[in-house]
Image (tube, rainbow over all chains, first blue to last red; front, side):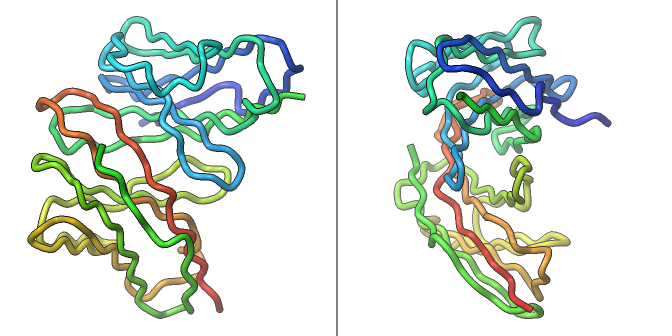
Length: 115
Length: 114
């Protein structure tokens, strides 16, 4: 079956512009996660959704970052007024969350470059 | 949060067994331990998961001592294609069936040499 799909795979933007990153999770997966990975670094947790609800937004780096999920499926991560330090790979993962020992399924990520 | 600590890097040779240990001193009673593998330009991929004692699948074994404050991923007879970053993940306790914040550690870069 189809895995987690992220689009675009690459995005180049100018400093100060807004960008939207999209994640299509595996069908039926109730949980969705966003992570950020800077070059050569580990995964930085940003936000998770249980259905359409995001109980904890404290992982978002600043108020320029926002995320939403509609219909319990597609999620978008929006970065307003992008800065060069926002350049990174943004990874999305989904999980069926059918048991406590959930497994994450990751997409290939969106490489964001802010010039 | 159950913070994890892993070695930054490890080198091995083809055909050897590799053991990567992760420390998670404040693991919660209901937390599972999960290991992921990440190749360059790809998202992490699930390898193995366990709660206690030993778990084995077709690619790896996971050893967890009784106190659960650490875990060891064992890769038998590694090949060049096992060169990747390996992450240990311990979830934050929450009610059953609910999503929760899952924080990855820094990962271990395993390099397999010919």
